[in-house]
Image (cartoon, protein in one colour):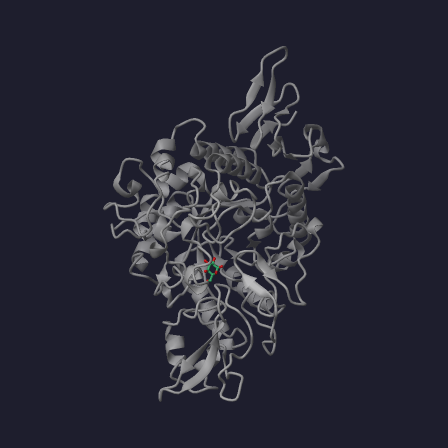
Length: 591
Ligand code: GLC
């Protein structure tokens, strides 16, 4: 059943109204969803790697924070060549993380605390240790076993050249040649990521039915949804044509005839991948089929697309009414810290999603990008470098944190669903001085060490300032070293401390819920926007004002501050007036 969730009041029907609320009351439309990266969240057994028991033990933290759901990055059986995004068995838990019983316990405990659980599904590729790939390797060219993947003969007189010129997103060629049983070189297989992650052939009905079955396995257990990895990559253009663009996790896709990053007015930032391996029309039929599977289950289960696609109108095709339910908004994540582009991307996001009746999502950090507390402290804030080395320009920690809190409060004041990445509620910076010999990200190795990769945003969470390993687990072991600074950010130093990042997030989530901002409306409020560097919007009865300029902004007399991302100043001469400093966001009661 659907209902109009937010009827605009007459006061909101100003000419600047951009978003009038949406039909539908499903939980995911306005949810705050917290990403747990299992290996780095909390360690239950003391081996230095986070696990499911660790997560279960820390659920009270997430309940107190006030999130609606968690998304768990992969915990399935995997040789961990890409931190679990290389799945060897989609129906089992890797012993590193625990057992299926541990998962059932986690799910029950989360549900008991009112927290929904989304799991990660990795359908573009399997691990090379998956039984299918292990069967494909010794099988003959053209066999059903090879037909589940994308095996091709090489070019050149002896097949010594790859079938086409595609590059892996992690660097290097996207093809690896196999060796026949007799030691002679054989066919090549496609891998858009690491060579240990062979791409499946989604034109093969057996692949489709297998994944529908995997969906049912986890739906039967009671999961509330799936985050779909590389959702824009599963169908490749017919004939796998050469392509002269480059794919990268750093700045999207560039070059080649097919690239159209769109006009800046549409909110595009260059975050989209394109080329014959991405965003092909054929992917949508897969999601229509999955939509039908989820619809057989009760409780508004949801599909969330990880699709680096631009412009936003193109991304919105993934969340048409009969497809997925949400798609990550990477245009928002990659928008520079600057008022005009932020206004543009907010408006474009709402517009594109309203066209298809889907909620917009908002996200600032995840396990693939530099944490926003550091990204926004770079000289060019907003860029998404693939990791930061110690010898490179370092982010300004204090500035980055101030901006990160302001950005988060702006995000949480927007209508739609927001994603948080573990540790951002503590204001954690990126680890920018990891020694290379502890790095694990294949992007570091496949680029020959030219890209630091993503390990710096995956460092174990600091829970207790005075405990070994900052309370990550019972032994003090951590699979990556924590930077010294993390002691200052430990959760136990922030709980109950007014003005701490954790308390700002907690209060924001509570206020967002009380004021129903997630299902709210959006209008720009010109009267508050005293400078071009201010983003000022009204969502229901709350005004959200972010000051990105260098000068403080004076609020109208009588403005009631509900929440601020940092200290605000009160001018006590004459009528008191609140001034909002640079890089600060406030939530106000609308006058
Ligand atoms: C997605 C994941 C990333 C992973 C890649 C390959 O982009 O978020 O972590 O490396 O897919 O599965």
